[in-house]
Image (cartoon, rainbow, N blue to C red; front, top):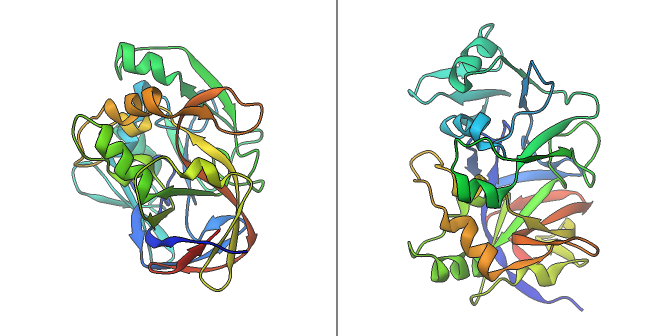
Length: 277
């Protein structure tokens, strides 16, 4: 029996991994996620690792850039407001200057691609610029090969979770942008209810069916400045204090918000679509 959870309240895609993304009113969803999402990534030429703001000391500057799809290509807005495009011959040099390391913008993950995930509790203790212990993470064990997803191709977040975070935060707000969801689901109530969706299927609109495969462990990224949003340590500390759970069977408890999902049946999704469990 299906149960109505709410409606699609927002859709986000991030054309370049770890850069600011854009909202859309509707999009096609395939087994490779929301159309245009994580289409490109920045790779460190020295280490061969994918650049990720999960290691803030090295890559927090990526969140000062915004990426949008424009006429079939990707347009990157730099911190000074100037644009650079994927097809520009100097795009790698421009981005290298922004992040302070030699990098390459690519649509193809390196073989056996990895990224560094700084231990979030150490980032909270030592600060964004401290060199802290990091774990090397293999890409996308629940995502199709050749993609830039950390784990699975879609990330869902409920309005109930955002309201719970806002209620517990010293700032009294919780911005969805900090948690980088693809789909925000407008739900009633307050509470970390997303975790209860594990191993369930969600039907969105008339076609799209998703399977929830894990809760989303949070790294240091939500605490970082996002465009005009200021740094907010509580964005992670609140979860560490109030929602430390195993992301899935056999996982160690971690601060979690939202869930990862795979695509069971592709389809189109739009703001306002009914979401059923």
